[in-house]
Image 1 (cartoon, one colour):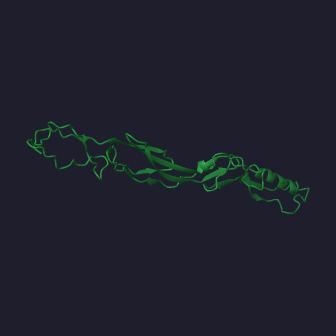
Image 2: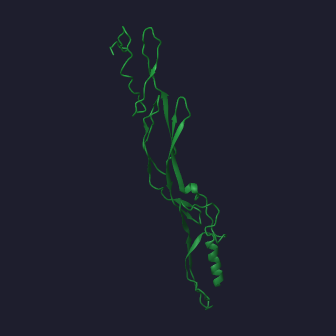
Image 3: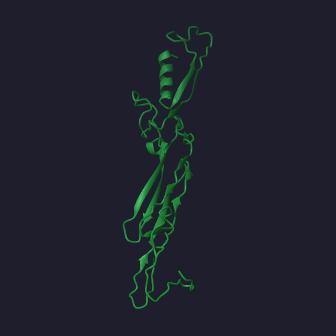
Amino acid sequence: TKEADVKAKIKELENKGYELVSNTYPEGGKFDKDKGTDQEFKVTLKAKEVTVTPDQPKTPGTPVEPNNPDGPKYPAGLEEKDLNKTVTRTITYVYADGTPKTVTQEAKFTREAKVNLVTGDVTYGDWTPAQDLAEVKSPVVKGFLADKASVAVVNVTGDSEDIKEVVTYKPLGSWVPNIPGQPTNPIKYPNDPQDPTKPGHPPETLQYVPGFTPKDKDGNTL
């Protein structure tokens, strides 16, 4: 066996994804000097594993070693989308008479992968730690009431799906003074300045009408 033959076989196996562990064939020498004695040499190889980081994703089919196009190639599962993920929460504010508005929150996650160059098997590490998407308070919109005061904080991981939330606004009601002999004139309730889900208080003073005492629906004098 010639040294060149040994090196060629090692190179062939390396191109299949193996890496050399040890080789007892004498470097630069002749192995079988004594034809009367059987001699042995041992070449040990193992499947090579490489780590792919999320900042350097790989395109399937590209050489692991750019200078060795005949060598092992990266398999699928190592692209940008495999090692990087963004979990998005979209909050849509729907108004009775207007174009919906949206607020978007994002949490970004990354992970590493190990690939066995012989089998092409890809093993993923854990996603980076969970994150909180902060509470978002619903804005006070003049003349409207929201069905949610806020969208609560939520904890998400790299395995979470995107989240959609909807906050719906409906027009505030009105109070209607019923004054005999006069046309009704609805007065819209004001907003509570702090809570978008509640109306404010109506005016505390009522119009004076000679000869009449203002009362509520239960007959209580106002």
